[in-house]
Image 1: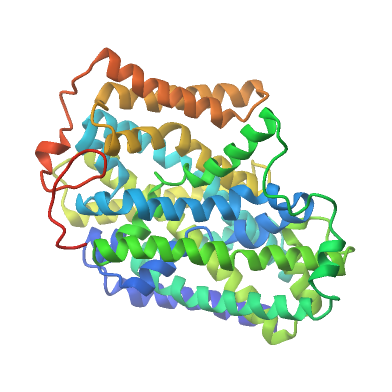
Image 2 (image 1 turned 120 degrees about the vertical axis):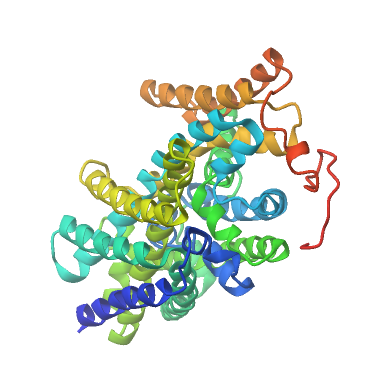
Length: 482
């Protein structure tokens, strides 16, 4: 019975995708929902950026082992990211009317920066998408007993078809519905578990000393690790295309900023539910599956009634599918807009839309293959994806907006230097997190580029967008959409 209802639940995604496909008449409709999303849909889509496998499965697994210090990266770093996007990035980027982050690099730093940024954005998603597929696979394996790989392959096929049909329109609509259902399910499970305990004091007493400490030990190494955890997703996911697309799909500037703030607030509150469920569940049932990533799914199977199981597993799998769909759509969009169009600038919008849809299929196949070749720690795979963009794209994006001397050479050196140093440090297993060295190298590359070539021959945003107003750069502009 459970399997039947889950199958129907998942197939409903295809139905919604088919319905949403009727709204897609151009590449802008497919990629950004025509920039027409109201606050409720924009906020729910932005909130759903990460509210999938890493929040419900990955973070609780880390939390029950290491307490708050083990989950700084997710969910706290994710909430920080969404807040910073709303505070410093959403408004100026929305005003540019662009489709991808690489479009911004083209305007600010020139075509070479556009191409390099696109080449870096696309592979940064492979680990993230693989993490979602792995999560779907192990959940379906738990419910059905079918080998994990075939669970991954079948669910990836669904998400591929679903994404190719409706794009951001189907994402925004399903995200809104799935978010409501998954939150209701989590609240019910949390209440059921809490009623089986002797109260909050008992829960706290059963944890190990320091479990709820939020600050690191007062040592340099621990402090660096703590900061690294905050910035992995907190800063690293700011220049990621899927966050950008969800935020930029809002109907105006004011909505895009409010959606970011609201999504951040939702994340820092609702994401506490899986942590609470994981902790209490482990205390009540220490004999549950040794793989803590499956702690909550196993507990639902053991504790919940059949209707609640249907509600939870259907919503969980659908939420992961939505995250997967957005993560696949992002690099596919960048490929079409900034790689394919880079070499064929005169292509029609119809051809561009077809190219993006084809890229969705290719990226899905690559990530399915990766799931068989990589480790299965969901939390680490997601962090790896964010670290990739942190060391290569965060500095040139931020410097381009808020540091007027930033130039093309600095942008290129920042991207290349950051990624090379990061990969090198990963290979030699440095004492401190590799992303710290990569970020410092990226900053150094930008500064060095400005020192070598003070004036950039390309990408003058002041001239191209005289009405753009960005804090700290002295722009004056119209606020009609504010």
